[in-house]
Image (cartoon, helix red, strand yellow):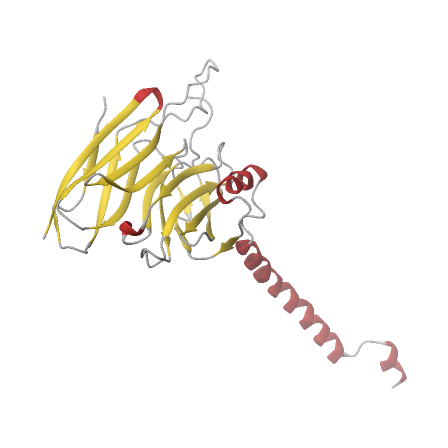
Length: 165
Length: 106
């Protein structure tokens, strides 16, 4: 009995070990969630600057914007991109603009779309260039002046040519 | 050579949401590339796109060098009346193209 006070019992050890393992497995999940909600705040300075030029001092809330790109891109010279915004597109509540940004392209701006209630639905598609494996961000402006964002991580195997011809 | 295509359904019912596809033939030279001798290749891209429905603007886009060659766009509009849907592209070195398509709304 005297020994139990100084040494860790088997039950205590298993509890402690379980806690550590539980902590390890839980941690990456919570970290990933935090990353996706704060995609803009972790973006490079040039990207954040480009976004700030569009939104000004307004707050950008994650959500509403669904950005669709292939997760694995074979050719960065033409990557299909489609962006949808959850909006009824009525005169009172519609999407005014959607702006797309990248993290590692030589220029963070990709494209800006300006639409209105006559669009019927907020869904636009095009083809873009990606210079590297990176996160693509989209920021939309609604008619009430609020800004919403969405992001997607893309792996690029053949980058769009930015150097020698 | 300037070439562009606008594709949309020929007929639609009033109130239908129709999809418009627009493509322009253009190399979209980014301005970030160099020749083998190290000489930078100047930027030559389409910078602006606008679409009008019977003269009223319904969609506009601003392109940057990250848009792929032969810029392709898909967007939508509500069919309100018969008429023409005209798309125009403008860009560096005086590039300007307009292409239109007719729609009959029943």
